[in-house]
Length: 292
Image (cartoon, rainbow, N blue to C red; front, side, top):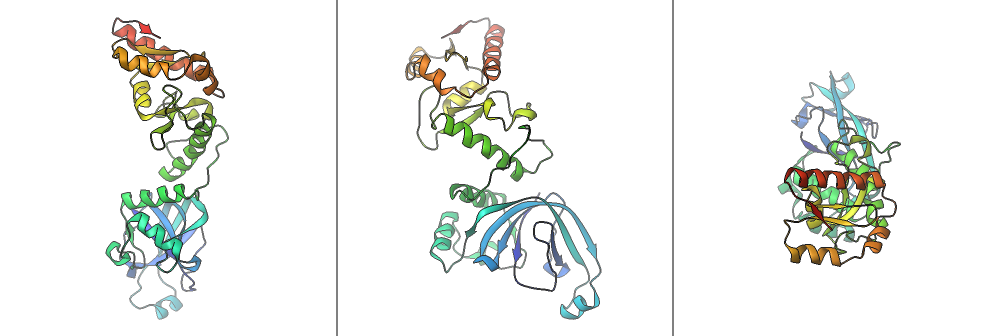
């Protein structure tokens, strides 16, 4: 999969259908493919990123007589048919002449668009830069949440659409626990994240279900994934007896059982019970017992 910048400008040679089609010709010397990801860079809105989406399919045709007369060396006109298009709530400016644009460019590490190839009519993006742009849009609260009626996030969805669906899950889970780890109580920004109880990889129907999520620090999240710990709906914390006593005691003592139970409000007990079941099976296979 490749990443592209689709530039939007005032022109009538190849009229686009915003969010549906993007039209270009062979003089661009690009190789857009089905499944590629794009960002709109809208020159009519102050040189700003305004949307992202996926190329559903590509079609081609011969230029009309008018198109052939206006543009030299045109042999083929391509139409990228778009899907899963998500528009930013507000444009993300990268204009070199505005204060906001300069700040965003500095955040992204953009010093010269020519070095990035953005001066071309249809420049390509590396995955890292694409993710950095989306991360910045998220930081600026410009990304909308994608709602799902039944909390499912199918594998067929694009990476971007899936990310935005999970954003709603993350926002709800973090807010519910006041961005505080339900195990150790940590609330350090950047260290605490929303974790799935029923695994994201296998439980497609509950990927975006906030009742399937709890707030954990990265350390405790890893411990839960490895089944070293489990959290009961009563607020009781179960810990692998092989974990050092000082580490276990420290984590178990930071939040009382009742306070932990309060932080679990809104979590479906059946998902918490899954962690307990997996933890006990893990210990049983090792011939050990859980401690709390």
